[in-house]
Length: 554
Image (cartoon, rainbow, N blue to C red; front, side, top):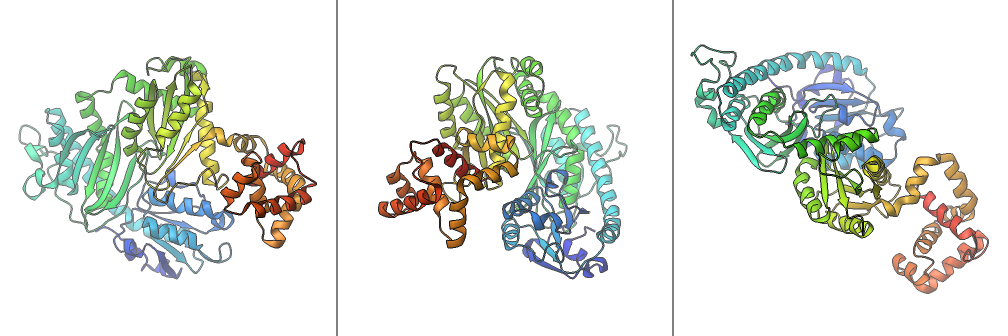
């Protein structure tokens, strides 16, 4: 019998914590748990597999900026974590409202423990209950894998192989290529009456019962989310969400280590999502073999994926030069790296490839967890203009709200591609931390953000090469009186100065951007000049003030 979150909250080890659900109450009633885990690490999401009850004492959350707390919740929800329980008290007085809102929006049950309890006691008690269910799931998953292997060995179609799994987990399956082409599909009804295995897949071909002969449909009433992106322990990547028809679990299917297809499992309401997740993961090797027989990836696709993996890991230049020709990218080409961070990275790949085909001479793309990575080769003559066109084209990419895209600087030769990629990731990190709010503001609430890293050159340089103490000292030396004035009078002189400097000291343009009258703008500037020791135009202090305003945002 699946174990639900609401049942766990009634266990003696948890009632002692005086738990109360602060967000996601509607989802809590149907959330099925797979494991209980505790961690104070805010970057724990990639290490989780989905369905966990995550316990935290709030130590890291207490000192983290609000934007990082929200991102923490969103990452856990995207990863398919069953619920998050936060202990309030000495370290964290209360769960921040921003976390509550983010959890409610993401459908992640957020629980407050109002009393201190030993987490180890909770984990020992609850996990011992979950072990027996996990064993049963693994047994049925292995039976499904064996039955699918029998079908594969006798030349069955992808639809027939998928029908075996569909009957076991009582769900609808669709296997599609990375470009979105459907390769095979099956529903639970195709498994035969009462969940029987089609074409004798649960038997050997002599008619004797095999390991899959006991397979039946699942009727366990449970629902949960899945995970997103490739798992940290190199098992098949999974993504999940709850739709109108139930819970959707998506799992990467690699061929020779290259993600070549995506298995979408649609578990109806009341279905056993944990069984679907486990069985789907255990059957990936069979599907990989089936794909290898029917649609082996081309050399260019394999090489492109290997190249991007090497670029992402910072491989030696000789390795990049060795891989790039097979991927269709000349080693001496002028290129840029593109990074898209989103929970729908796999689904965006086909749309990204279309944009790259229009905007670049050659390209390669690869999905790595919640990031979509790409390399775009641009013409040697006019590379800067072509890069600007690519930035513009990427704003047409159909993305979900909150998606962030960064285009790296031009790289001369494949050996410099890792640098372009790291600079793009640095810009995304700065935007995620709220350090470049103006550049990271979407046009509307329903759109994503496309960052041009060339506009953030100062921020990237400073973040990578100057420690925080040096930055703060420089800002105080240049802008101390302005900062003190803003703090005492709640004024906006720093923002006014930054806008004026960014506009090239164009007072009229700065006034328009700040939505103030020109006369008011002149009064503000006069006050700023008095605090800073005079009008900086025509002096060496202008550059120092401009740099200080940029550093103040970091």
